[in-house]
Every structure is written in structure tokens, then in C-alpha cells.
Amino acid sequence: MVTIEYSKAHVNLADQVYEPAEDSYLLADTALEFVKDGMDVLEIGTGSGFVSAVIKANRKVKLLATEISPLAAICARSNGIDVIRTDMFAGLKGKEQFDIIIFNPPYLPTSDDEKIPGWLNYAFDGGIDGRKDVVPFLQKAGNYLKSDGIILLLISSLTGVDEVVMEIEKARFRPEIVSSTKCSFERLVVIKGANID
Ligand SMILES: C[S@@+](CC[C@H](N)C(=O)[O-])C[C@H]1O[C@@H](n2cnc3c(N)ncnc32)[C@H](O)[C@@H]1O
Image 1 (cartoon, rainbow, N blue to C red):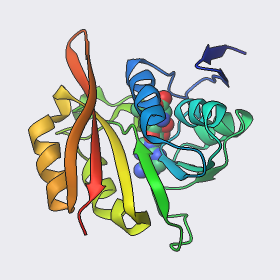
Image 2: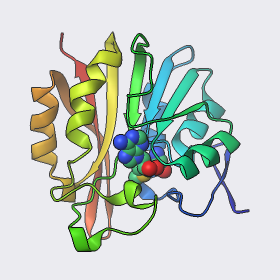
Image 3: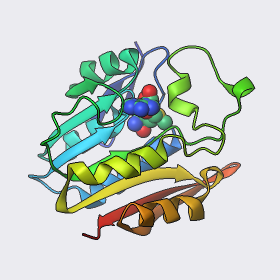
Image 4: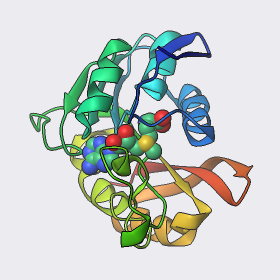
């Protein structure tokens, strides 16, 4: 079994589960700037559980994650993450409210002939414009946030930063780019959305 070590976390990887990459590292580092001890944290699409494991290794928080892929859910559980296998927020009871909701979504624009077989497609396939999962996430996240809560959303320049910022505003969050890094053919960006209401 392959295990990686990062920022005090030890994370087991598995076949057909997204292997943490520059996007995961940027989101984990950024999350540590915002997550404080005692917070309630939700990660959507936890994959191997990498980002959640880094948070848990460095902060005393209550952390819950969701994941659509059964293979990734099993992997994340092996890394000590409390995971509900579900589509985005669907398996939550509906009453939970979090201080921070984190998502590194499938963000790459993907045509039908670029899809890959198996569960791993869910890690990459952002639909034709890269925003297939970003928009529903933004529409639903507010229902699960405390009034002073924030979202941290990772996207790529290929997803369309201006378009995502507009969607964030439409969903009644105040957007702010809080970190970014250049990564070969794209720029990775973490956008914070603070509840306006
Ligand atoms: C880019 S990967 C990120 C994985 C991990 N969070 C990381 O940063 O290394 C996106 C993850 O979201 C999951 N995912 C995609 N659509 C989802 C959905 N509708 N609900 C829950 N998880 C989803 C994928 O299976 C994949 O594990």
C-alpha cells in the first residue's frame, strides 16, 4: 500500500481513488489558515481523505466528509475520516451547520470522449464547462453553513475564475481569492465565499 506523508498527516492511497496533487496541497494549506480549533468542518468529495486528514492532524475539530465514490469512501475511512457515501450534501440529515465547507471538485472541462471508465471519472469530469458540480455545490452550501461560516472552493483557470466568482455572488456569498499557484498549463485558485445573509 502506498502512503504519503504531508503536514503531520499519513494518508493511504488506493487504486481508482484520486491521488493528492497540487490542487489538494493548495487546498489543505489554505484550509489550515482558516480552520481553528473547535470548528465544525465539512469536506465534500474527500477522495483519499487527504485534505481532511491534514486538517485533523493539525487542528482539534469535528470533521465530517462526503464522497460519491465507494472506493474513495473506503480509502478515506482507512485514513480515519468520518465519511458519508453520498452525492454532495444528499446524505446529510439537513440540520447540520458547519463553520467551514471545503470542496476540491472535479473542475476540468471534459467532453464525452475525454471521460475515463470507472469511479475515477468523478474526480476529474467537470462537464463541458468544468462547472457541472461547482454550481450545484454553491446553490446548496448555504443551507449547511452557520451564519458566519465560509466555503473554500478550489478551481482552475480552466474552470473560468470570473464565471465561478459570478456564480458565488449569485449564491449570495462574498467571493475572495485567498490563494493560488501556477501549475504547468493552468492556475489553481482557492476562492473563499463568506455568507452575505
Ligand atoms: C479532484 S478530487 C479531490 C479529492 C480530494 N478532496 C483531494 O483534494 O485530494 C474530487 C473528489 O470529489 C468526488 N466527487 C465528485 N462528485 C461528487 C459528488 N457529487 N458528491 C460527492 N463527491 C463527489 C470524487 O469522487 C473525488 O474523490
